[in-house]
Image (tube, rainbow, N blue to C red; front, side, top):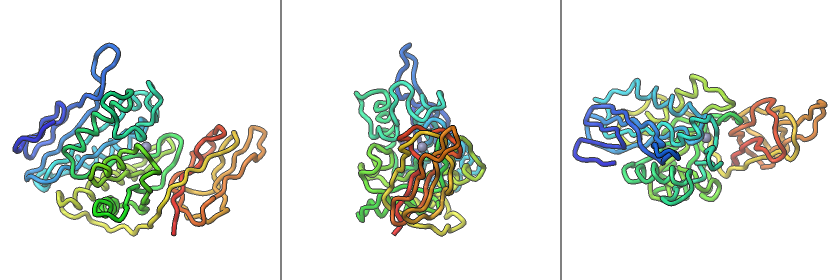
Length: 326
Ligand SMILES: [Zn+2]
């Protein structure tokens, strides 16, 4: 990775001024010695400016991220771009190839493995290799997610604002992506998440969620394309984006789990506002009997993500993600 004059080189992608370059970066090796790579795209504007790092598929099935990147690039006019957008399409290429949320080889959640380790296990090594490039060159970072196969997410953005200058820059980045719900999570709630690791190194970063339940909609793709345009506009890399989105502010994140096994019947919807005791869903056994009712345990909360309807669950499976409302 290097930036020399007007020339940006990331892995095998080499972009000059006013060009889009495609290539790969190497994140590890297979047992046969061949390289574990991720596709990377570097869009270099006509003028020099900041570097925005965008990554997708930290979780293998979350294809809305790469599709959003493609949609963004399809409409990008390089003559209006100041600076460089670097797009890592599969942050976890092993999980992507296997269509699994976690790395098949070590079972790790890549979004709990950042900033990674140069001598760590496979997932930590892959995290280290991409993160060390990103944190060296980028002025800000977007991590694009789409709920995965098990959960349906409302469109929202995670960031961490502790009241510091950096925190306020992450908050501004969160507002710029155009999500209707902003979730300011404590630093210890998602340890090892990429966006928190960027922030720990002094770089504003956010995680954008849209989609899930094993499907991608055109709206999810546009949400991610718009997130990149909005972040680039905030960094004065592109002209200001069009619409202002009214947003709702949430805080601490709570993951609600089942204690029983059965089939999940939702009785609430992602994006809904809940108060303590409101029903979220039911676990029903194969005799058709309700064995558990999941309820909102917080005083007031926003339902960020909900288990896919009628999905079989184990006891201890994640049913919902809730963000505290004031
Ligand atoms: Zn994800």
